[in-house]
Length: 440
Image (cartoon, rainbow, N blue to C red):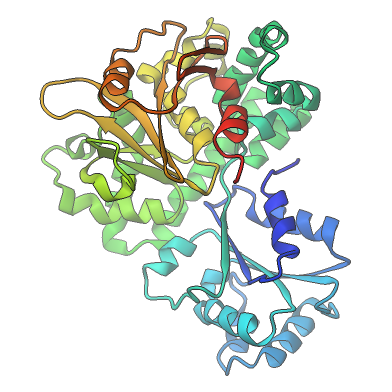
């Protein structure tokens, strides 16, 4: 299947100031596949090394950081004659050998001609455990689950995707509105984990898709025991299991009391940070006013937690595929939580976007689900699960702050009214790429 991040890898390869590249992302989002697919299409040879339980690589990095010595070790490990001109070196699960991360600095400074991509599922955790990172000596990309656009490509809908890119042809796009809504329902259930999508494309089996999702969730639980500090494992599991309940509330602000009665922030803050570092959740902080930069005005005591993947979130709640057949009920399940989860996944796929949410203080219930900062522009995004577009909160926000662009995303057709864009859920990423992220 095609991943759009491969275009970033191509730019990296041709960069005049290429550095070793780190691919970050949660387990099983496709980091290794992406690196190997890139190698297969852009290089003559690939030297792939997995550092997990690899004593030879542990021993290789016990010595100094002489680059030529390390290259000889890579050659011996892979039986590949590594040449800077035609070989991609892939170092997988690199966080298992912390000194290998440090060595990337010396590759950049002393042997920049070598093409090196490294990947790791728990790199974020390693960064907070005292591992020496070569700051300024490496490039980064973040890999998330497949976007809706990538999902359509996996299903062979390239022509439909091309049509979505032509936002101006509204009448033609509306002809395929119901078809795209049906695809959205499917995506909500399956999510964007590569193995789930690949299996569904091959077999069209809801049951097998759910079995794979449950295996992925089980593997994450195993990671809690294997990699988290023993005194934190139970708290991680408790916080992890409460995510669906947190998002099912009308007000989706994270409440510690839902994790355990009487729980306090100081008991679970480290557990939440661990899940963030592992790439399993996304925390969005509240802002009271949209000022630049929005991250500087975030209230770290008021936040929402979203899941890694909408399909895994559905699997955690044990929703059946029959939900897909009940008109559009999947969009409104858990008070629209699945729709919000989907929108966040579409928005966060771009590296130059900061995201918070806006809510007023006091008794007011006014809230805009997502506030994006793109360069020096702040864009509110309100999410509507159905086709009822009454937007009291967004109206309050627009009247108070007069944004240049405001977005309301729902199941309704595309429409522009002054500076307010009604963008169908299925068109959100295409719209953002074309109108907001052209320099991404």
